Image (cartoon, rainbow, N blue to C red):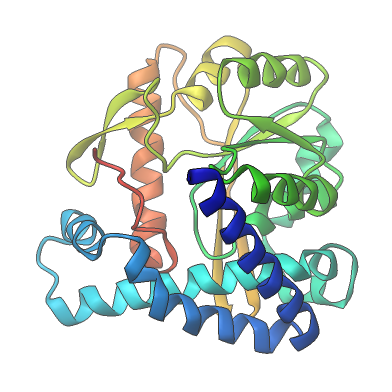
Amino acid sequence: MRTIKYFFQFLVIIFLFLLFKILGLNTSSIIGGKLFQIVGPFFRSKELIHKNIIRAFPNMNQDKIKKISDGMWNNYGRIFAEYMFLKKFRMGQKGSNIIVEGQEVLDEIKNLDKPVVFISGHFSNFELMAMQIEKSGIKLSAIYRPLNNKFLNIIMEIIRKEFICKHQIKKGIGGIKELVRLQKKNYSTALMIDQRVSEGIESDFFNSKALTTTIPAQLLKKFKTPIVPIFIERIDKVKFKITVNKPLTFSKDSSIQKITDELNKILEKMIIHKPDQWIWSHNRWK
């Protein structure tokens, strides 16, 4: 039954992708945003989303909570539609739609040819961050979680490897081994630290404990790999700004826990800056 459901979802999504290709980037992004604002709440718990927002902003009123929720779904839908135009962002005229603040940091990482670990969250069109890093000439691998829908996952892996980052590493033990292998070849790593991971540790996140990945902290402790926060925001429809921060500094005796806690604080600041562009539908504090 689940296979039939996934196959039907696959057909619907392929139809929408083809429609978006015909309509063009600007129109498709608008339609995708509006579509997800309408249908999104039927697929994800409104109660969970509002609960998550209140956890981060306990004094926020219902009108502002709804505004953030609506903005999240709109952004989510825009990302969905924009997958069909990643080639234009990478190789075509839409590359100019991305402004990079901190390009000099990327240039220095490229010139040094030593690995770093880029950390961020699911903001705006998050796929564009790894794309821009690789476009800058940095050898990169990106950790990702395969989609539950095996039919759609095949298409998404092709898109990601072709236009986002060639070296896609599946989340899990096997992926960690691949990450370390590439690390030894001076490949940097990009990963999102905002999802709950069962193999992580409990770390403070908006004043509550949340299971958080320790990969960045482990790479720093074991290989002295610098950690570089990176953030993307949608500044106008299909125009984006990527901010690349300088590598973080930690004392030699900083523990895995301390480093992970500090990274969550940085993530909190990113979310507070653009709360309607983060994906609140994830059960982060489960």
